[in-house]
Length: 395
Image (cartoon, rainbow, N blue to C red; front, side):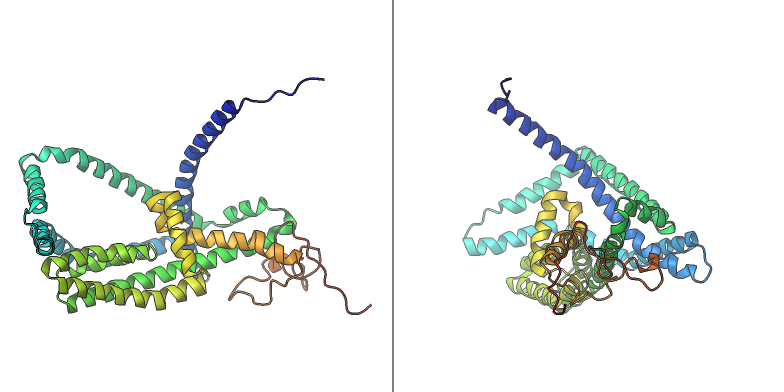
């Protein structure tokens, strides 16, 4: 009898450590690819919808998708033309007054603590004087920023081109995904894809409304309290809306500091503006979008944003809600519905609004319905589900 050979515990620990490191490196690469793919899909969805609509009027899908890209570019250009001139002017004014703002903030703090050294203002002044006397020290950071911008623009162009082709011919992609699923489960797979699409469309609609509402309310509020650089802070806050909850907090910090440089009362007024805007957002936009369309509880969104940020980095925060909605839908389809079906609990007593209940009806014979997990007509169940039959009341 041959003695069983076992690895030494130290060897096991080394192998486990190497596997974890390799897994971490692979995850970083896969995560970046997954985020780029998700952004591309999100961009392709509205382009495909417009291409489908225009195709009803005999306009080729490629022309329809191209029109969608041109419309998006025109809207973005129009917004930038309206916002950029005052934004650049006020941003220049803000940058030129940073030393004075820091000095004023330090004066406010010194009045509370009794310290009058002025070290913060002197440090800021020395920093800018050092840059003026030796501009060459900015060469490295400027070059790095330039490379980052160039890489970002290249990625955006690649995403737009890929989204265009996805919108023009989505059938090969969807057929390829369905081919990975057993034939008797493709109705269920179509239903999952329909839920994902609806959730992501709802998120995009909500983000657009939320950005517009937040930008307008912040701009009007800061104008009413007389705070300078209102357009800068309004645009900044509107962009950060894409990060749920935490974006509003980050957007409120600069205007509060600028208000504090003027007076504590102005800082409190600025804080009040953001609290009011946040309350409107929390009680109107987020419940209507996240709870009704995306089907996510606000607490799940708040915790999930932190988790997504840790796993995927800052770029992942931009698509945190789509990632969370996809995770919730997959858990519901692969585990919750399967468990409920096995225990004989009905999963269709309260269908979701607009959900594709008969996902595979178009491919079923006339007069028939998609097959259930047990082979009988009914609801499409997740793979591997064996629903428990209810006891019959009649013989």
